[in-house]
Image 1 (tube, rainbow, N blue to C red):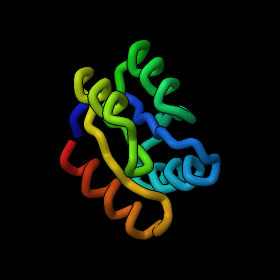
Image 2: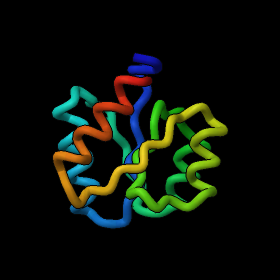
Image 3: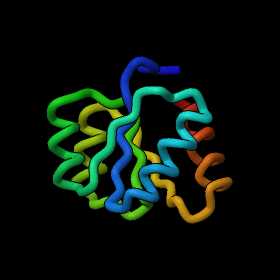
Length: 97
């Protein structure tokens, strides 16, 4: 897994969605997870730290996606509405890293 020591950034404005994403990532063996509640906060975090992936709620602002990709992170668009689908999407994406 590429950059396995680098954390994953979860970008979502709702605590519930972040909690779900964190739980799913923990089930998949990802221990290092940071969070940002807005696009602006995500971009600031991306400027200060390297991430292997950025998980968005599926409708991330293009500037967040662009900032993530410019810094070598993979963008994973995954809504938290269906936990099983979220887990599959994250698992598939993490396997490709």
